[in-house]
Length: 386
Ligand code: PMP
Image (tube, rainbow, N blue to C red; front, side, top):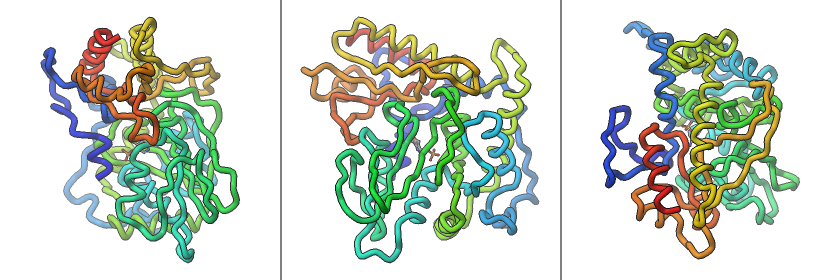
């Protein structure tokens, strides 16, 4: 399953670890443990009490097109996008999902024409998020077919292009690549938050996907949302959710609603306790920028590895110029090394090979959002290969 392969099996989740020289460092997955210190520091601010009589019904709001969407979550999502300025929400329907993973599948179902002799093509520019291929191929659907790299796509007929911006694995901000008639776009904006990249303008696309996994780090709550312009498409996505899981856990939605509300309030009125600002995004940006500085310093004179630079842009949220600090590092090995993942594995660091992203095995993707001790151990091992 995609979730299992993407996230791997995180070692000793949440507990303090004693890392020795032969501990395997798993940076293959994007488990967002980097934010744990922030949330510990928030104490009880996000605690949600759910009495036994609550959440019995399947329904949350029968008046809403997305009838299983908790009104509190809808409100918190809209507020947060307005505070951050990263997406236009007002003329969009909100569809909640069990992670944005479920919404990707719902979007493919909703966009693929049901009455065509051949399946719609699904493409994404390489290097692409490795789960798209896995999701598109898993159930051998007759509705759509994975066709790989959008740069080399030349088939006729309906197609769906996944546009991931900033991109997983390489952190680059992207636009659609295929310029043909009959195409539909899904913008996966999981990382379009100020801790990862400057917010240059509110995104305003037909289908935009977001997830608390990457926004706040609460991947375990499994809450994602889609902002969908077209009513019929939103309706079809809701049908997909109804058939696959009859909605989304209300407990998770209530918790996510609270967390998003606390984040929005922290941005409007930031305080500081134990040296940590309540503004989650500024905190996230500062910790990620320290990690990126450390990584770049370690690789500054490297004879083995290289890293791309990101352009400096003005961020409307921080009101400052900065470069991106992506959730993953996309590291390239020099020409004489054919398999970069194997090289890292030999030094007890698990990464994900460029091959999995439709790219060259000279590249690996390395998580920058792990627990601090894993990141430190990675830097130590990287210095010894350099
Ligand atoms: N899209 C992208 C680009 C991702 O990186 C991820 C998580 N790795 C997802 C979607 C899925 O996230 P989730 O199902 O946890 O919401």
